[in-house]
Amino acid sequence: MPELPEVETVRRRLLTCLPGLLLRDVVVNDWTVSAQTELELNAYLAQRRVTGVRRRGKYLLLDLGQPQERAAPASDGPAGDPRPAGFAHDGPSVAVVHLRMTGQLVFRPEPGERPARFVWEFEPAATLYFQDVRRFGRLWALAPEDETAFFEARGMGPEPFGPDFTPAYLRGALTGRRAPLKSFLVDQRRIAGVGNIYADEALFRARLHPLRAAGSVGPREALRLHAAILETLQAGIDHEGSSIESFIDPAGQRGSFQEILNVYQRTGEPCRVCGTQVERVVVGGRGTHYCPRCQPRRGGMAPGSRRRRGAVTPPRTAKPADWEGPDW
Image (tube, rainbow, N blue to C red; front, side, top):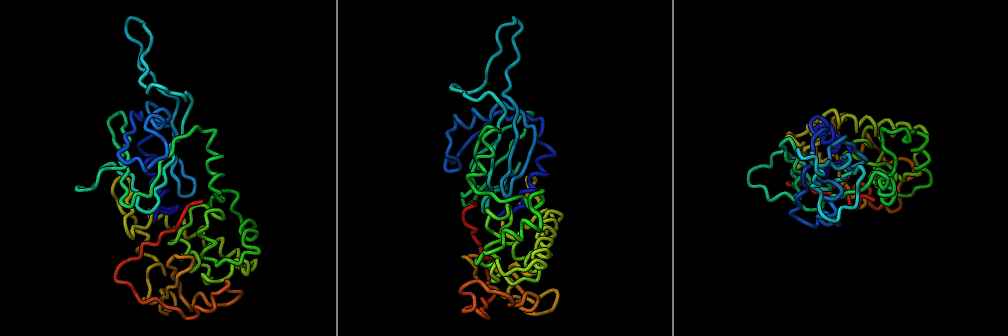
């Protein structure tokens, strides 16, 4: 599933080419991608120039200006309005996309790909396709003034690289939590953008066991974990994401973070630090990977975790598709 580094990679790619282009039309081929009608989507998005590309957690945001009008004819008659009948929004707009498990925004689909779930057609000539094999991705269109309420409804936590994600915030958020650390890290209400891959890797860097009760983490450990989260996410961004399964950027390029993974999906392989076999357990329904020596079972463990002491899942022949559940 694309996490913060993958979505940030997509954002950076699109930021180099979309601003200034006119989004001429939104074509939807699969209406499970949005709860809004074609009329609503085009009313908010069509005939507007792209003014920016942003990210909020795992969500990609496309900023659009006010709707454009056709140039007035030579007779100085009224300008034509290309927007759909029933148009009800004259101000700037925001398109919000969530890639979920397998969503891809690409300029050139691979040969044989199934039809895109939606297509953005731009002027000058450019087309962006939303490919999504598992069909979990979503598209929303809204006014900028509704953006805060949109994310508040999803209970989004602070951005890891934002001013609100401080060691003090993390320490306070951990306090009193009985859930395993792994479950805490992938909870979007606590930290926006962290998912399965980067949670496992951050816990390894912080030398913390994934089954530790979140509330058992002490002040020094919280500092270590805070630094590890930022270092891991930054490494993911620097390597342009993890292409373990389906992730590619809009140009069709794969990321390379998977080449330096320490524990994620390395079950049975030697730890890169100490040589101990990497183990795998299931935490909150998610495959979780750790080194039992570098991440010892010390401190308070989450309720029920002691029954799984020493649990090891044999190496898989196929990579697990670890669904991370809802994003709220």
